[in-house]
Amino acid sequence: MRIFLTGATGFIGSKIVPELIAAGHQVLGLTRSDAGAQRLRAAGADVYQGTIEDLDGLRRGAADCDGVIHTAFDHDFDHFVANCEKDHRVILALGEALQGSARPLIVTSGTPMGIAVPGQPATEDHFNADHPNPRKASELAAEALLSRGVNVAVVRLSQIHDAEKQGLVTELVARARETGVSAYVGDGANNWSAAHVSDTTRLYRAALERGVAGARYHATAESCIPFRDIAQAIGQRFGLPVIPLQDADVAGHFGWMARFVGHDMSASSAKTREWLRWQPTGPGLLASVAAIRD
Image 1 (tube, one colour):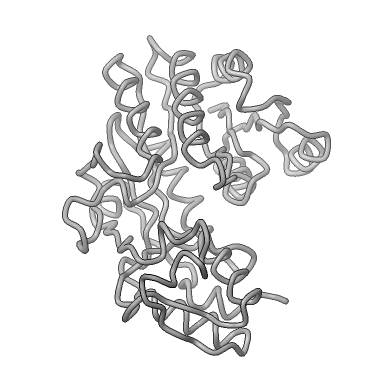
Image 2: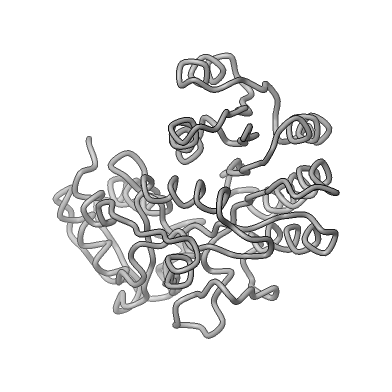
């Protein structure tokens, strides 16, 4: 298949490119820069220069392909709500280009959208449309497309990691190095989930090739990692003290991340593994933290 890939030069997208090409697919990668175009050509992909703000351009790119994987997202958390609303518009535009066909559209969300009971792992068969996380806009767009007959499925991300980046944990590392302490909230017993980026790229391909319309798949290799263990791994890697924080001190220390750090973001991928015959094999999150280079 010829696949239109947004976010093709990003952390995950750049690794999806060789995964798809090795499986015999062609990739048309979206990039806004000449440097990104050069990297895509070097990886064996075709280049579609544009931006996620250009909805007509996205429609044209999608219309010219046999399927779409959408991984692009604006990670400026100072404008998180607006960026989630923008992603909603992007997904609708991509889906409009595929409407009336069986061509697959794989979009990206986060595992917290599958939390049915606070403190319990998120599951693939649940979508909390009332979740306070504005990222729900991505899945609301997918549901709207599904009602119009579009072959759309969702990959929900945990903390996706390697030694280069670790999702929100990358920001925790930066904050710890800046403040001189690695902190957790309360007793640090709230759990986060994670998956290595190599396993995540295989999941996107599996969802593209074997996924079904309306399904939600979890990029989760480790379901429940106590936040305290993450803080301790950061402290050990950089030789920093590890301290608990009380609620009153969280916002001052973590800034915009305060909305995430005290929450349970555990997730199950049992159904994903069954449905797609996906078995993660990459290193764990704490191993990736230990391997971070200075």
